[in-house]
Image (tube, rainbow, N blue to C red):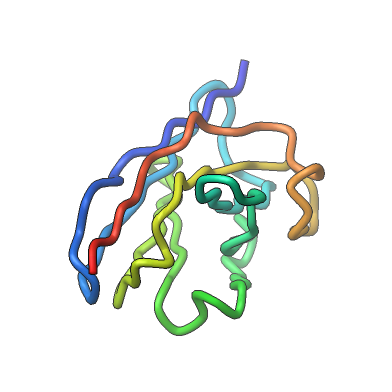
Length: 124
């Protein structure tokens, strides 16, 4: 049974930083693509970024490009989302998701496993 657990959310002022973590149990991230999505109240769950375990290639939504950075730690079986220069519009519940496939996908329906989400609130 694969479980993904996010942590690191919280309240931060605009311009601040947070680092989210996504740890997997039950299976290693090897061979997977891990993505982050976010969902603000009353809005759809939007793609934020993704990292492929093999090669560590990353891809980001335009709204976070240059501010957010994905990385992975093989030994800890964990993916990190470093969020800098946070804006109030970044406020949302952030979810990590994984698919054991060779390619990543921005479509949320292509991901089999999801974490429970972690709240990020950015005050102005």
